[in-house]
Image (cartoon, rainbow, N blue to C red; front, top):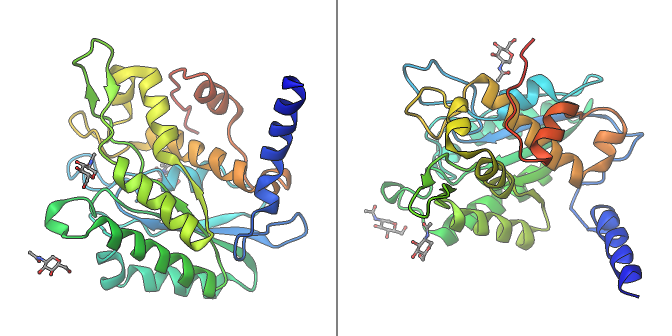
Length: 272
Ligand SMILES: *[C@@H]1O[C@H](CO)[C@@H](O)[C@H](O)[C@H]1NC(C)=O
Ligand SMILES: *[C@@H]1O[C@H](CO)[C@@H](O)[C@H](O)[C@H]1NC(C)=O
Ligand SMILES: *[C@@H]1O[C@H](CO)[C@@H](O)[C@H](O)[C@H]1NC(C)=O
């Protein structure tokens, strides 16, 4: 009985992404090629030089290494951005403009990841305001014709060593919960990158984790191999929510990367 229940549970879980009612999310085999528009802060953004250390996220690794068969995208990650500054500074308009430009030829997706700067006291953005700002982005991305995907913030690589076993300091826990709440309120898809990155960083430990730093003292931003690694994790999380992206061959995660991440084993991507 127990086994049957468990088996049924697994079967139900695996069909959930299909039955869940996302606004424009259905992505079926016959549909247009996906185009990923990435909205976020420096932890999504393109790598800057290691000297300036103000941008380096998972975005370019994702776009460069996980998209196939004509699937493509653009990285609008902006260093220092909050959910407020991204809109006020014109970045969000560029995201929506891009969606409108590509929507006849592609199926646009918009990933939305903030929190690292929204949480800073100087930003003066409350958690409820952050949640509302994300919900507004979801609704505007949908209205423009895209499938929005909320992304919980990439973990920082700061460890608490006090117990003898280093473990990641959960400095973005509130923003993670708020992002998931925004997804529930707006019926948007979300991926829990904070959980997946924290789990992997706990498994590999600090010495390995710091090899992904943009420069030795920067535990937030990613170098190119780090971008490829965490970009692969993002792609894997997206393919779990949108199975057809993987089935149709548009989204593909390097087999070795996926296997090592699944097993919590340190992985250094071989760059072409
Ligand atoms: C992405 O590709 C560009 C162009 O080839 C390259 O300069 C950059 O280093 C790559 N970045 C990542 C994170 O893969
Ligand atoms: C912070 O935001 C609140 C609510 O928007 C506002 O009333 C307050 O003046 C702001 N504080 C500062 C220091 O800007
Ligand atoms: C989360 O929010 C609570 C309540 O505002 C606060 O006490 C706590 O310090 C926050 N946690 C983190 C990790 O910022």
